[in-house]
Amino acid sequence: LCLAIVLAVFEFCIGIYMFFGIRRRLTTWFYFLFMSLMTPLTLYIAIENPVSDCGCFGDAVNLSNWETFGKNIVLLLMVWYVSRNKRLLTRFITERNQWTVSLYSMLFAFVLCSVCLYKLPVLDFRPYHVGSDLRDKMNQVGQAEYETTFILEKNGQREEFTLENYPDETWTFIESKTVEVSAGSESPLQDFSLMSWSDESDITQEILTDSGYTFLLVAPYLENADDSNIDRINELYDFCVANHYAFWCLTASNDETILRWQEMEGAEYPFAQADDVMLKTIVRSNPGLLLLKNGVVYNKWSCNDIPTEEQLTLPLEQSVLGTMQIESRMMSVLKVLLWFFIPLLIV
Image (cartoon, rainbow, N blue to C red):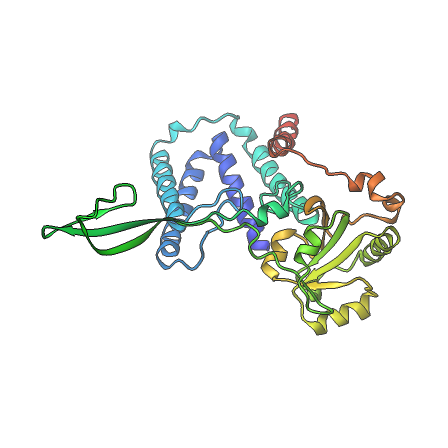
């Protein structure tokens, strides 16, 4: 985790240095060295294919391994050209203020990473974002397209035909072959499957079709879950029981760990087991909280933002908690830009 944060901060600062023209000679050569290391690595990934997506842009932009390698080739050539022609980089600030922008950029990147870890990511590109209709995504499966070709013979001459130009009966059928023209697309929620821990029944459709509110406490690994707000979780469950809302704890932990969690944390809520990767995809927190209604994600909270007892005085139908709070991605991006540039301009 620490290495991931350091790498993100480093790449962000390199971009800021290039943008503002800070330490042009050092920055361009440092960037060239960095790309010289990353490009062979992405070539290896493209050839060996150990992962389907390098994750360079997270879930915002999905690139194949060869596309990633091609992108790095372009960046490597560009930074090499700029390193040989440093006058292409315009320095927007005085040399005296370079350290101010440098230190502020590093501080901003670390603070942004910390906020996203303590709460939830500012931008959520995953299929379980607030406002997502999970039932609709479950049905988003594209069918593969096939084309059948017929090989026929007439007067010793063989030709290929399709259904559109199939000839008359004077031709003799030899064989047919079918090829896949385009592959079918998989549902973004293809691994969304929930099994009740008590009786091992499938409760996926029960949760997705519930017309009332449903809270899902998502804890991929209970043994590593943050229990600092366990009282809030238990109070939330009591609130759900009193108001007849469904509440489930989703986990990939084994039976022994679930029993230990129930004993240590006084958990009376029901448990369901699911794939750990799917659970980590739902919410970037262990545990995290999800609110569903009619299969639509109404809200998400990290373990540090779980609703308090003071916020649970009214039923969800009359509360802000039960209202979907959607903010456009463009507005979120604009806020991040303002958070960066306005304090920087003031400084």
